[in-house]
Length: 109
Image 1 (tube, rainbow, N blue to C red):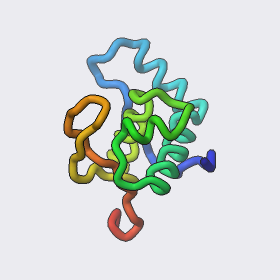
Image 2 (image 1 turned 120 degrees about the horizontal axis):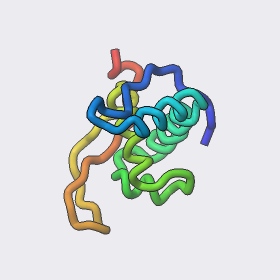
Image 3 (image 1 turned 90 degrees about the vertical axis):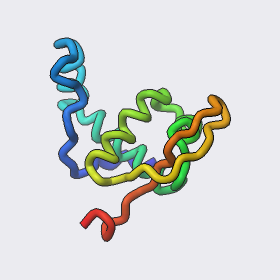
């Protein structure tokens, strides 16, 4: 994965109702650049493996947990870099889950 930083404005990760520690953690990951770096790495992973489930993407890398990866995918969806496609059955849970697709420059405009 590239490690390049994405030029994007990330939405708040902590809700207004979250404790102060969540806001402090968000500020730290934003300040260090790790959130943007993780987004760039996950975007590259999605581009190389379009249409996969978050659980499948999580198994393809070793830097983030499944939940951590899901948070970055959510950031990418909220900023228009990715979108959720048709659901597919997650073989590990048996539940229907959305597939994740990269958004083309053309589609974002």
